[in-house]
Image 1 (tube, helix red, strand yellow):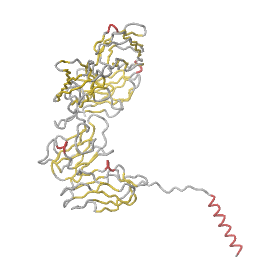
Image 2 (cartoon, one colour):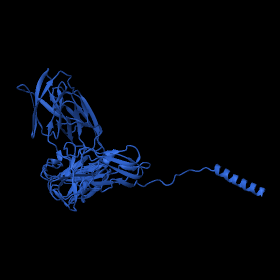
Image 3 (tube, helix red, strand yellow):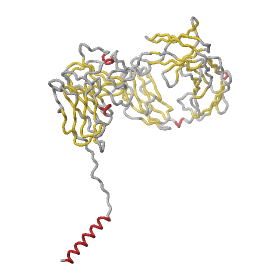
Image 4 (cartoon, one colour):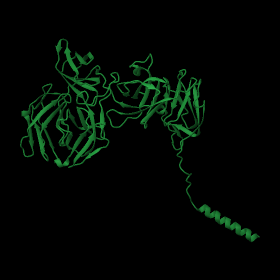
Length: 535
């Protein structure tokens, strides 16, 4: 018996030693991919005759809140946002109302993607809590989709709003008041649904609300709207096209930045704005140009001793006079730089930027030659607004060019002239470019604008057809290799550009149709692409 017992002990000891010597990895089991679940709430979800000031939500595991300030949608919106607690991980969430609740009203709180489990970040998507301060829960719904009116990609975080059309409603309500109901597309939804609505007549708008104030601010917000009122109940799915309105022109008080120049900020479109400068009864000569990169114009005037000048600015309904006290400062100096050197693409023009507006160009003092020293026939145009000298000439492939501007070729606004300037550039072979022929199908009306854009939405080429006299094919030749997006704009007002809509005028934006896929154009390729613009 003793030997047998000793034998068993030795066997157990050996097993224990082997078990201790063997290494392994603790996996912890499968990764948690499940969203947290609501166990219960106080008061219960769907409560009527709500009289409290807070709600509590209890979950089956520890949860955390992520971007709840941006994700939580309260409808109808409250003037004071509710406080959502706690700020750390917990098995419960408390929502405290800071605003007085309206009587006989159904409220919904959509938490979007903000409720997540604490360990893996699994979100409880679109969790909604509903209660009513009245005796029943409103149950009607309205669905809508949206897209950008000009850009191919639709924006995120678009608010969909319903304004009740009653005796207090006017077209200006959306600028001043918060809506009756609201929801948001957040960062992923393309089909949105307004729920827990009551029967009635409403104005439906969608706003990319940059200020997060649940009101329409034309300076910053994009808007989409239905021209006609919508009535509930109905099962229509509405589509809204969002656009940024053209805001009215407005100028602000100018400020002096040098001895001969002032900057004046503006809102809206500065095209065709009128200026007048006076010193007492004397009219002062001036030039206007755009200040690159900012919403400001440059006012160039002749240097003067300390004095005051009056600057009158007018466009459309804007008409205002400003007083500028001119102080002695250092004057701007004349300088030049080529917008592009090295290789010049066939669709580009050679341009010289000037630091001061140019008053006169003397082409007889400009020497433009090829690599074999033969003269190039050219013309020059000066763009006052951009302060650019533009050279127009017929380009030849695989050619080298040089431009020499002798002293006096360019004379600025202050009668200063250039020193000798030399520029060189070259062209590539036509085989380094591709050609794209867009064949239009089912054109609904003219004029129509066909544009090619790059991946960032920047227009690379554009053609306008005012009628069908040139046939259905639009040619874009000598394009640099790229993947292009093709879009068609029905130019309703015939101004040659896309025109956005107007909410107050109840006018939608000009129609834009995109070819659904990018079109690749490679070097030495000819591409023909049919484009149905009748959709």
